[in-house]
Image (cartoon, rainbow, N blue to C red):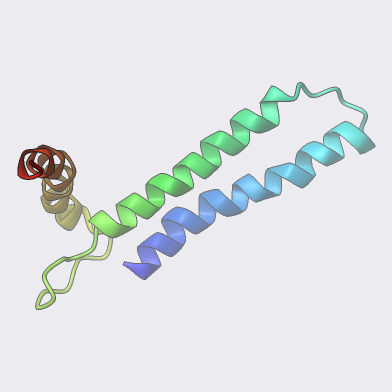
Length: 100
């Protein structure tokens, strides 16, 4: 899980951070007028991808302590996503009905 998270979070996060000095270089050194929204959109895409990488890293892990997961975790993710969503959506309905 940690290696998948390192790749799925680290790569987009690293690229997103590298864009800040790149935009600075374009604007200050090369005097290219870049609209303010462009760095915001680029950072939003890469940081959002890193956030999705955290989710994938967690869901693609083998939740069975006796079984080791696969390299990419596709099978584990396919099995764990329904459990993950059921715990989110199912828990909200149950917790409201339990409070009186």
